[in-house]
Image (cartoon, rainbow, N blue to C red):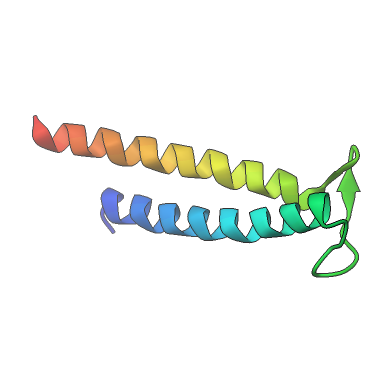
Length: 75
C-alpha cells in the first residue's frame, strides 16, 4: 500500500472518530446525558473527550503527512 493511500485512510478514520467522540462529548458535557449509558469520567471529564483529543492529534498528523508527501511530489 502506498504511503499516500494509507494516510488518506487514516484521515477518514480520524474524521469519523472525531465526529463520533465529539457527539458523545457534546451530549455528556452540555446535555448532561450519556447517549450510550454508563459513561466513565477521568479527572472530572468524560472519557470520550480524551478520545476526541486523540483523534484530533491523529488528524493533524495525517494532514501533515499528506502535505509533506505533496511537497515531495512537486520537487
